Length: 165
Image (tube, rainbow, N blue to C red; front, side, top):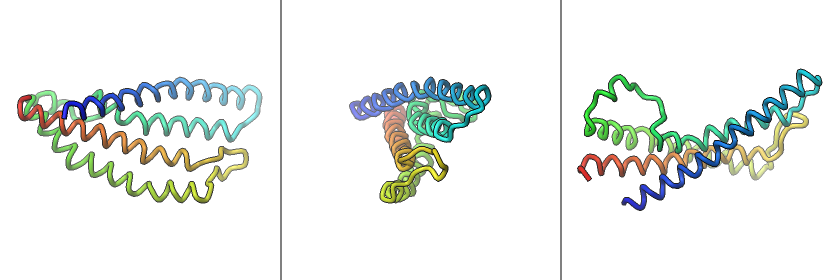
């Protein structure tokens, strides 16, 4: 199972490092769009929507990377005082009973939504907005799929920790 954990962590690391560049692009697009709007008095619906889309993709595809690096929020005042075994039990419980079912639910609920958007060629409802809204919507099952994989990797790691290996 080590190969599974290593493979999952490699995918999470790669996706996290890849989308970190979206943060830079988001800053640049936002600065340009803001300058265009306030200095030149020109608004661009497409640029404004692009900032929302970049932020969404950054957030969704960064979930697994954040989990891999233990960056999600928890009540650390309790967790930090626990033994390594107790931490592994808390992590295992939260992955198996909370994270994995939630990810599966999000993938299941968003799948038809994405397919329908693709079938109808959904685009922005605003004049001058971005085309291919289905592409943005597809990031929901992709992001939760990556998070699910990393969660399963965490399950294996915590099981190994509980067994002492």
